[in-house]
Length: 155
Image (cartoon, rainbow, N blue to C red; front, side, top):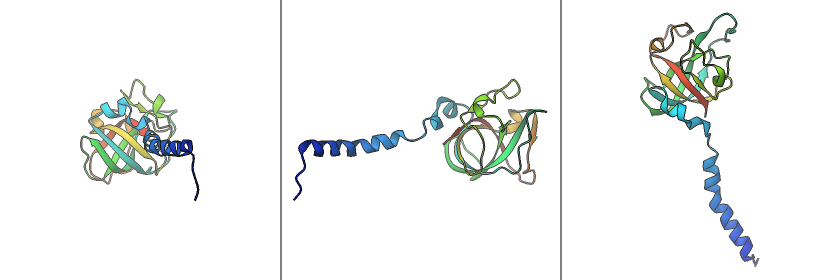
């Protein structure tokens, strides 16, 4: 029979008690920052399913680019269906530095866009009410709302 010291048992119990606290703090604190939870009329967590082509450079003009997402969770507001089309302003730029005089309020903590990534986004719709510049939309054969990404964070 193995005898364990009281200090060892106390330490082991304390470590086990702290596990839920430590793992709960691991979730992305950026995903639920004030901007993503208050901006826009809709807030979702969604997986970026498709970027239909390479992004054009930003050296000639500013543009919105439509990407396809699979909705994982709707936090507030509502969306039509479990796949949505989201327009991101100047997607080659990190969200933290993308806002300019043409975009109104846009931002977030996503540095770059890659298919498969999960984003928590504050959205507005329809995009034409929020951005009057050029929009690259490779989904013109698909009907439905085009959302404007106001704030985009990694999740």
